[in-house]
Image 1 (spheres, rainbow, N blue to C red):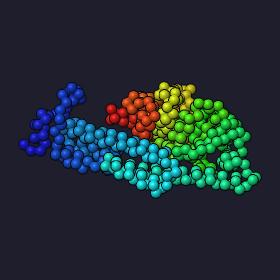
Image 2: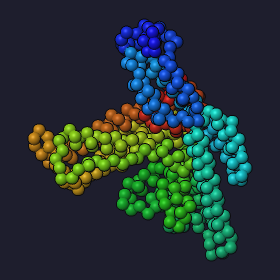
Image 3: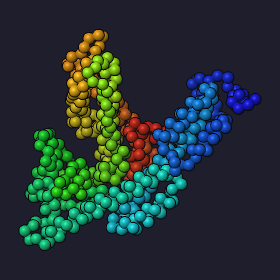
Image 4: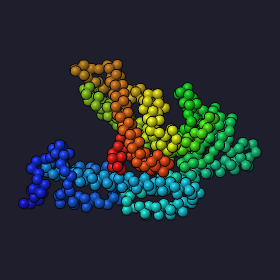
Length: 456
């Protein structure tokens, strides 16, 4: 016998295995085709490992095999894939922690010395890290140095300005005025943190002023949110000081008490996500052409299918926002970082982060879809009848509400279950939580359950 016929005889296969047969049979050592062995050899180097590409390669290769042997070959290749993914995720998390420790322990380290230290860490792990990870690590360290130097140069400028000009107030007050438009009426403290500039604001009116900034459109709700807020990472541009754009963190110290340290850790983690991590780790926003044609008629199912895909795009963007909140809360280590509290904050209708309500997601979605329908002069038909504006509005509302209640909430539930499982595995202590954060940061929310299985 030759080739595949001999292989079939060795395994005793005359037809594809059923699911029940696969689940009930005794574990055994898989016999691999020569083609599979060649595939494994071509994919040994973890330096070239990219999970999405690798998985596509495995699926494409398995489809090229005869149906009766696909199942056994797939098991081995998927097992290899999961092991490489585990090694990659754990080593990436560890080197991220090691680099962060170097930066925290040596805040004044020179760029030259930092490069040498990071080079040494990378050299120790280079055989277990994909080149893409090393490249992103270099980028992150470069961003850290850039932010650190920008923040320090601003502080030094305002210190010198206040010392040389008697008409100027203390440097902290001058900096506050140039950022937020007015001098503070109460006490403020400013310090550098990992990834930004941290303001402790002791007067609530000063805090509200800084929180709202120049935003007038939603001022009543922003004012209310500011007074309830313990702290915030400002995703805002500062025309007078562009080097501080997206790098300012506020703490409401008017009534913070014992929460101050946890607030700093939480908001600092947000700054790390935004300014130091690669953008794609937390920004899942995307674009799509809702409708490709103009002046045409669409059947209802085609219309609904298109807007459902758009709804998924919006929900995925909200998942990126939820992800950074989960990890920032885990960082605090107090009651705010408990899974129960995070679950309430993100999933309860009265929670602090009800993005569907707070961001007017339903109205945004409806206006976006119907705006494109009008702009492209589309007509939607169902059962031979053209749908009116009210019917289209209802369809839009149903689609995005369904996506929120099913896709978003289910993904979030499974993600939080996964975080809870990792807390049990690594420990609910500072070291364990940091490892969990650096592991989960690498994956989108919907992949957290897969990561837990691979790490278990």
